[in-house]
Image (cartoon, rainbow over all chains, first blue to last red):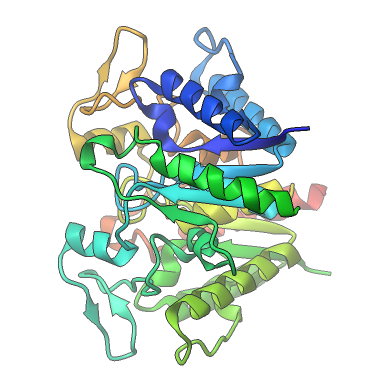
Length: 191
Length: 191
């Protein structure tokens, strides 16, 4: 039976989000997976009060994640220097359940590099910590994002693909997604 | 026996992070909890290669979360319009394990309000979605952040405290933390 993989990422916010979701499902199938996607829940929420609608969507996503055998998370920085927080939450949710987790980012910079580009020079404080202009410490682990997400890159066989793309295609490019699927197909065969 | 609560948040990056951690532990005790904190792992990582250090820290945090009975997450927007992604990950991790989760934010604005302040006017597209200047859709659920985090506000008895503070104290103010502890003390007594 095909393994079920939960496909998380901020590409759900794209203007052509449904088209991207379908493309992702087709690619998943090519690699032997059934892709579960938040849009699978064709919820009629438009008539609901906003909080009820949000609750329904969240609960349906929880169900999909509990069904899924693994997650593939698009961790491309979104509206800021880090991954989408909803995607980070979902990655944690799956790892909390001890399910195999994989991710990719369409940016290849480190977290510290992006913070520096946003806020200006970082400096090394006397206590040995890298700090930002506000004096807050900055993780300096040569990782693509916060170390809780970074754990994907730190496995004996890394479960993270960094696939740098042009600014234009940063949310729509599926090359990193496909490279991750290809890796998952061999890696998940071990389970 | 005292319940163990995992204390997550970007206040670990404050210049006086250890002092804040100790204050949080003392407050937790006042409300009958033992606070577990990432700093409990007095790891000697300074001699380690960055990736090894990061891996050790992440794995020790996983252990603390697996021990914990509940989480209290500081979801104040950090270096951008959303919560710290590491904290979002940890919140997901605990909810994935079906453990009670609580949070607070020291900002009382909605996600859409902060995005608008950052990027400029949002608009309603013909398909009924609120969209940003890039045409990407914007969750419009009257929530403090992405709906996966928003789930805390959507319980029959909300598990989220919004405690607006001055810009100065946004990471160091512990009033929201304490109000959340007070709520947890009565709520967790039900379990």
